[in-house]
Length: 308
Image 1 (cartoon, one colour):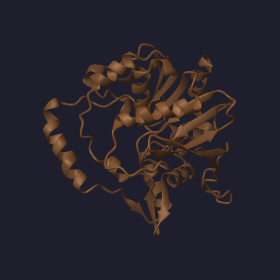
Image 2 (spheres, one colour):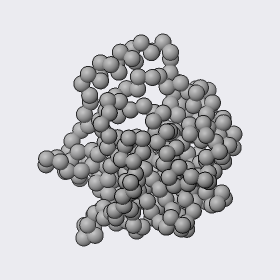
Image 3 (cartoon, rainbow, N blue to C red):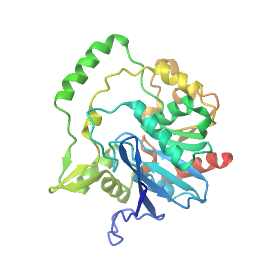
């Protein structure tokens, strides 16, 4: 059952916190056993694109980019299971579940037409696998810093399984903070180009107050090591099968722009998407939507507008 509510992220009287320009709605949809919290911006009659957030992030922080879009779009962004408002009680998280969740989400928002996807980091990796597995469902794909991981060594499998079992006995915890300002300072330490007001907004999107402490709105079991080793060849097989045009976007100061695998040479330029163009945004690290939202909005909009 679809439930909708409007969102007022911060008080308009608090001038130290970024003030959204475009209203955000939160929609709750049951998807594969999880009450998914989904952010919507804009009129549903306008052209749709779906945004997929990165690890530890949530949909709400795409607000900065939405506010910079020059044309009318219908933007849909889920909080993936175990992040943000999409809470679930599970012992472990498995990457294929994200693809299956995305498939159900697209069936809700665009059952008959291929969809324009924009993904950041983990979300871009999910979108890349999905676009290769079911290429007919994707019309265009903007990949922001989602270039896969370094290849793994099969010989590491026994130790990885052992580590996963042992750490699962006593699940990890996230840090807690005395105030949102402390978390905002950590956001800026990682993304120094993020303005003070944006960092404060992000802190409130990422966390909530519980029992007098600021707690992240994410399941700490996401920190468990993946029991299954990352096999880059499998990801590249999916990327080669993508039929949609792809835009690869990186930050000039991001550690992820460097090659993750020695075979890649110049990094993202060598990713094996059949039809890809490349943009590097200056003065930006990994979290481009915090640091250069106007520039990121511009390249997203220019690219997706070609495929309306």
